[in-house]
Length: 242
Image (cartoon, rainbow, N blue to C red; front, side, top):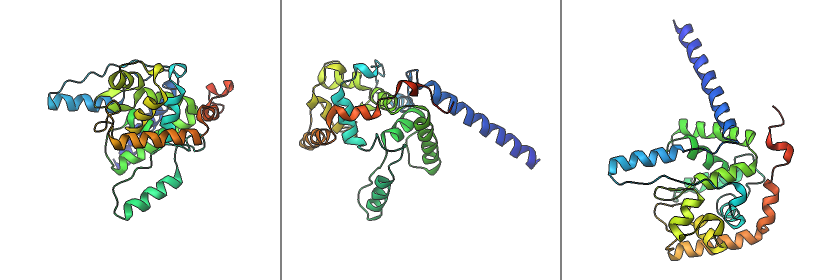
């Protein structure tokens, strides 16, 4: 009896692993029609009675401004081009900070944020963290860095129920994403830690100061030249190990 149960559970686990690999591989080329976080926000709106519009327009890599790409890297993950999904030094620093009793500090890379936004529910449980690590590893293995950032920019939340760069640019500034200025891009990146409370369109002093720091970091990283480091080789559009 126990042996049969373990056998069935093993088969189920193998199926789930296989499906997750196929899903991540498919999204290497296909724009995600929705994310787990979008579903979560929609369910929240049903409970609160506040209608939200999750309509968004996907902007391919070439239509996204370099300033926005660099602002997000400068704000969220300056080692993006160098790591394999996890910034060990940042994780250690965050753990040390949290142990000292400070406000909780995260250490999520852009790859980790894509994994949890696309596939997972909100929370800090260990099962969720385990799944986040699994999906992060898959994304890093199967997608080029450029694709990771492209999906991030098109799926991250930039205000309550506002997802993706195009929707964010129109919501905060009344323009399309390709027309964002460097300052506007830095303001959008500045609110990412708390997009439901901070506004890029009507920035507080804190948001303005953070945006100025982000622009300074963009220059120190080399500006748009940094993006050459995450540009995939033509031969890399299919994983070399497949």
